[in-house]
Structures are given as structure tokens and as C-alpha cells.
Amino acid sequence: MRLLVIEDNRSLVANLFDYFEARGHDLDAAPDGVTGLHLATTQGYDAIILDWMLPRMDGREVLRRLRETHGSDVPVIMLTARDELPDKIAGFRAGADDYLTKPFELPELEVRLEAVLARAGGRGRSRLLQVADLKLDLSTLEASRAGQPLHLYPACRKLLEVLMQASPGAVTRDRLEYALWGDSPPDGDMLRSHVYELRRSVDGPFPVKLIQTLPRVGYRLAVPEEHHDGH
Image (cartoon, rainbow, N blue to C red; front, side):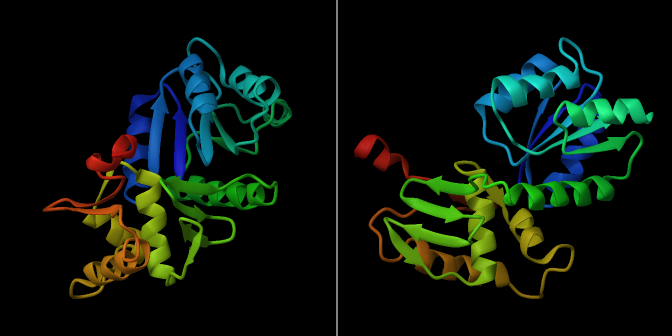
């Protein structure tokens, strides 16, 4: 899941990054409404966590422009210290999918994000990941490369999702293990076995190998440098 956090409270942003990155998600942050609106309209996010009170442009105006000017239907959860009913109604009328009053517990935010994403899936949003000729549709869980369907075990599909969402960035072994097994990874190097299986499907029959091992770090899914620009 790729999240945008539009929030000027640095300690809260740090807590959100610690919590969600440990669970295999990618986050960007903006400290004010103008920067947040720019990121929200130029980058692809699965959901946005939006504070009500922001410098330069308040959260309600960010949301109004996101919905009305840019036509975006990305799920948005608003964060606010305001818990009066008129404020909540104003937030929903501006286009919020959900509303969370500060202070809140991070697991509750996580559950609410999962709920708004599940609802958003029914709105027909494209949830297609693509790197080079490799595609993964998160709505149907179908993967293909160069138009050929790939048959992946669930664990391999989950690894592929995390690697594609981070591409071309690196993903640590710890993060991949957490994505598969949470806090209870199995004994032995099961991750290596799953990556081997994933490579056989994704790279085996194809001349350009996308899955790269980064010694002592983890893995990356990206087009090798020598194949950029068609070379």
C-alpha cells in the first residue's frame, strides 16, 4: 500500500512512518496543504491521510480541490482534533471517506484504511502495478509479463506486490519477511526459497532479468541499467 500523509505534526508523521513501513507499506509526507495537493495529484497513492488544520491550505480545501478540480477518487481519511458533529459533517461533505479524531491508536487507523480501500475497490479504481513489461493487477491478483500470464503462489504474489510497489527502490529482507509472516518468520531461510520461485516465474523465460539481489540488504525489482533506453 502506498500512502501519502499530509500532516504538519512531525512526531505524528514519524510514528506513522515507523508503524506502516514496518508492515511493508510505502509512505510519502507533506508538511502543508499546498505540497500535499501537489503530491496527491502528481503521484499515485492507494490512500491519503489528511490533517484538517494545515499551513498554507487547510485539509478541507485540499480535499475539495482534489475531488472537484482534479476529479480524484483516492480514499482519504481526515485527522482532526475536532470531534463536533458539524465538523465531521463538513469533512464528509468535502469528500472524506472516513474521519478519525486525535488522539487515536495506530491499529485503528490501519483498520480504517483497510476498510476504505476495500470500499474503493468497488469503485473501479485501477490498481494495476507495472514495471517494464511486468504487470500485477491487485484487483484480480492476475500477473503477466510480455502479455503472458504468470502462475504465482500466494507468497510469491505478495513478494511481487511489495517489490513492484517499491520499484525501483530496494526492499530489505526484514521488510519482505514481515510482509509474508508478520512478527513470526519461520526457521530457516524460507525467504530465499520464495524469491527463487518468484524468479523462475518472473525472470526465467525472459531475456531481461528484473529481480536483483542486493548483498547484505535485500532485493530490488527494476530494469537493469544496461537495458535502459532500449540498450
